[in-house]
Length: 138
Image (cartoon, rainbow, N blue to C red; front, side, top):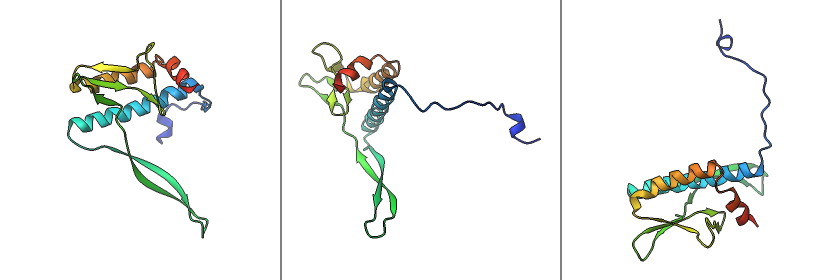
């Protein structure tokens, strides 16, 4: 018997047309994941960069090749004058307004930053920030 006979085979078509709100959630969740990795690297005293792949066309030969370069990730948090860590969530270049007139999350210590980012990522995937993303797009 072959391996295919042991597997459960079905006929399902993949849906490539995701709703725009779902694509935006995944985009923001991906950026929050980068922030999470950056915060973990900072806690360990390491640097963090993301690999980015670009396509470059040689003008003489017309050959297109892929080039991988490293991209620096800018952190979304800073330490305020009070000594508390302030975290801002960005969608593109815009800071999301989380509540009326409030765009930062106050975190007591830097140790709680990683758990806060994990909670925010879960909230984004659950759709809790969909309206704030819509406002930032306008």
